[in-house]
Image (cartoon, helix red, strand yellow):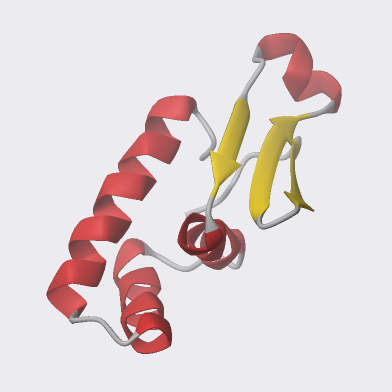
Length: 87
C-alpha cells in the first residue's frame, strides 16, 4: 500500500490527526482522527507494508490473536481506502 503524497500526520495530546496539504488539499479536504493503533497502521502502510504484514505487526505489538488483528486491520484499511488516502 502507498499513501498519497499530501497527507500529514501530527500528534496532538494522545491522539493523531491526518490532514491534506498542498495540491491535494485543493482536490480533497480530509481530516482523520486516529488513536494509537490506527496511527500504527498508518505508519506501517507508509512504509509500504501490505495488510497481512500490518496485521502481523499489530498482533505482535498488542499481543492479540492474528485473527483479531486481521479483522481490525481490514476494517481500518477499508475506511482509509474510502477516505481516498491510498494511491
